Image (cartoon, rainbow over all chains, first blue to last red; front, top):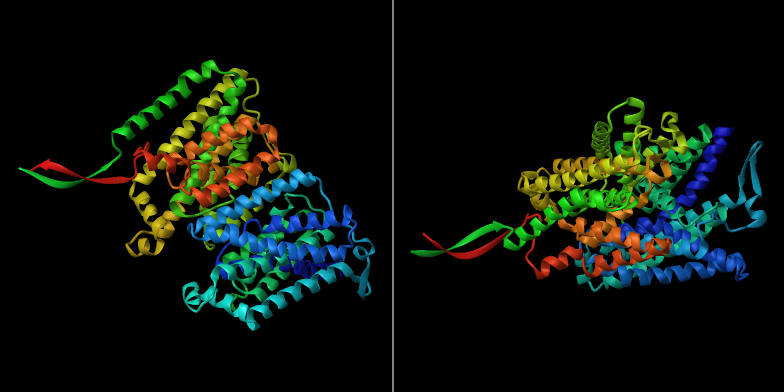
Length: 289
Length: 336
């Protein structure tokens, strides 16, 4: 039963990783940028939510409703102000700009909130659980995170396949020059994609903040997990990213079941194994994103 | 009778003067500085040599082969742990341990290159980071390497402090000079010419018969071995390694700053960047995390507005190349 429990907990954890990875996958899919500040942006959202709840006495749900659009707007500004200009500077420029941004954000957080570990209190929601079978129960909060993760991925996927903006994004991803000839404003479109990506990762960050202890440097780990989910799942596919997140989550909890020190290591090793035997990922580019 | 011909040359008079000044600077560092500054300063100057090595090797990958790695701290760690383990537990002489640690780094880089080379661009960057995390996590699991608390160097025990600091200082200077000259030699070789072609256009280079993958692998292995030297040097200087300090991604951050600020894709750039970075670190140390905020902002501004860095500004107004790699073509009248 312990093992089954580990697998189920891993699947639920995987939902969180998929939520974290969704934006990374989207930005790469649309404009081939790897945003190295992705992880610290999630952590920044957690800090802002914590600040609103603790110092502003704002209810948590309202904080979430404020944080996500604010971060999405910041994402749009980030794309127009930093990433778009960097795209003109060759292949390395966006990568290096996002690296610099990550360093700046991490250390601003350190300066403002100190290096101490914090977490967002959620009261009884964090401890209540639903029984599935005798000796087997799942936490309500991890179940909620999982549902939100799957829901967000499904929503972004629907947006890409059903709306005209989503279509324009897929067209730009396939062939930016031709898409531009068809009258698509690339700079604005990239801004929208990054807004969605940063909005979803902000949502993910607040959920991370509710489920675990975080500090300004926690973003490094978030970036690595999100990246592993994207690669394991296969580049350019959001459902693949979900699958990648689940595989990573299960690898970590099963590894931790063997020995608590092996949890994260097991996740890394599964990632490297996928890279070795199936470098294009488990579900490569089924739907263009 | 006189005719007009095109003359192709590397460098020029200004460059000769510049290279001469650089040789003088190295001689001053080798012969004058050790006898005229405090022991503490001497020890912190080792940090400058480490920065020169890190910048030069990172630039070799990013500036010449287009590979941005943020996992080079793996090789700092292997170099640092390697030199202490090889000197203390295996009993190699210190210099032998330094070289052997670098060889181990090269071997690990060669083996892991088959994994990380499956990724390109930004995903290569994070892939190397994952490898570094794995190396770090495995290190903490090995009891012979001190687990989570790390190792202390015993080889210098009983040695005179002055002699120890001076030895590490001269070793550091030597290694920095060797790494820079080796990079220069590599770039002037056939491999280097191929790399320059790969940097400019990988597809065209491949079409012209440049072995793209092999050249990149050579660079990855050579660069990682160089980083191993820097790691070994850091361990000798601080006498102690812990997993969290020696495998810190902060090392890679400083490599990137050194290269960006100095000027990516030139041999001189990382040297200039290392000096600037070293001085800033020294002057702004009190600022703490605010210092890194400043550095991050500077890096972003440099990438967007002055992508060729400080050295790029120098070469724009003068025609100085301390390490001439570029051919200039000049039309001259010549006797036929």
